[in-house]
Amino acid sequence: MDVFSFAGIVLHTFNQEWPHPTELVEYDHKTRKMVALSEVERRQQYLDKLTGEVEVLRPLVEECLDYDPAMRPTIASICERIQVSKDGYMKESPKDVISLYQQVARKNTEIEQLKFEVDQLKLENDNLKHQPDANPFTPTLTRGRYYTKWTQLANLPSPMYGAYTAVQDKKIYVAGGNSPVNVAMLQVYVYDINTDHWGHLPPPGHYYGVPHIVGGKLALFGGRLSHTYKRTNKVSTFDQTSYSWKSHFPDLLSVRSKPGVTTHLEHVIVAGGGLDDTIRAQGGIQILNWVENSHWREVSINLPVPMSVFTPIIADDHLVIVGYVDVNNQLHSDAYKIPVVDITRSGDQQHQTTDTPIRWITMSSADHVFVSLVPNSSPPVIVGGEDQSGSPTSDIKVYDESSKSWKDVTSLSCARSQVALAAVNNTIIVIGGYIKGGSTTNSTLSSMVTVEVGLLK
Image (cartoon, rainbow, N blue to C red; front, side):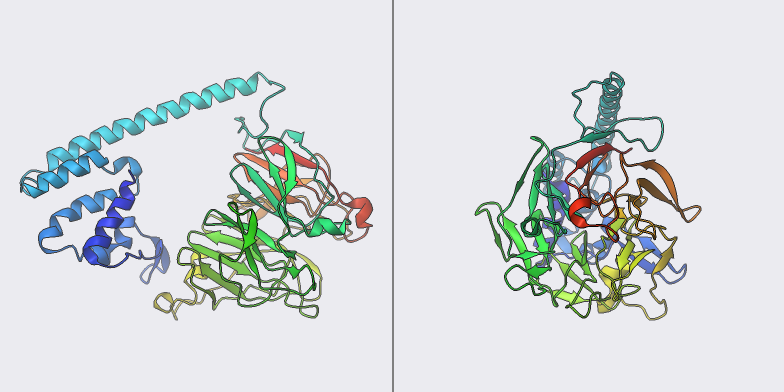
């Protein structure tokens, strides 16, 4: 049973309204810092409404909301304590019962931790044997922080560069890229990790759209309509049951080609992208609460500069951007970050503050253009790219917060830029890209079908 959700149901039942918790953090005016809130604090207004006969349930609800799942009571103990509460015993001596269940929970946590450590030791022993048929998607244990061992996977059906990826259920979806094969740009390719096989989904009707997993569904954001080539605000969602694209989430407020797309908790964030043939980049940001599936709204914070062709990630509770194309179609290696809560709160009147200006933080430049950010990497990790002369690089770098700089940690098997990246366990999958530099050579000769997986620890 989901004990945490049980607490929400109790609040929902006795408050006669759906509990919407506050944000994960709040601004402390004394320290001028963002302070993390516990799950109990986020629902304080609803807990305070448990009065009268149901007030006896408040301690139980608070325990069910504990941040540590191991500290939450079991459903069996909840049933028992509710019965005890009915008999009036709960008010007299609840502590002994609560303490007993907490001790059992701690012991169970210790047992699970020991099991995990044993599994890790077994995994390390298997890796030391260097088995040739080892699964390349299994995490590897090493003494150093970063280690790569590149293994080639099945080739892409067509060469592609500058694409975007989404990962779900052992499948990698690739879309939104360029290709010397025109039909390839109209496809959403899908790679099955279990079978090492590429296929494709039915055409979505718009290309240059950015794929992303939202609420367990594959969605495609913006791009150009396949039959008119005009930029679109369309958001298509793939329905597994009918094996077709449908309109599940609302369309964007404005047309956007190759915008930056990411998610944070219940919010989808779509930023920048091209408006039309004359406006190649914009600075606006829209967010959607996909849980409520209501409507998109513009936020009051813009990107640091108008941009397109970039992939934002969430790292250490910050929205991070590295490299982009500007309004004049010029390439940049600049890097920026901002607390993601500033984006999700922007536009929400009850959370806006006037005394603290919200600004993007300028990070150290990545030096190379057309770099690719590893999804969900914390600290941020960039792969490949080109120098100012268009020569590709094989560098893989991590952002060092202490020195505020990018540090070389390992390298690709060969130099290439504009690669698509996916992350599965402790591995990165490098898909396609350029091997001779996209800005100076013929794309037909230079783009790749090569797909490699590298263990990254």
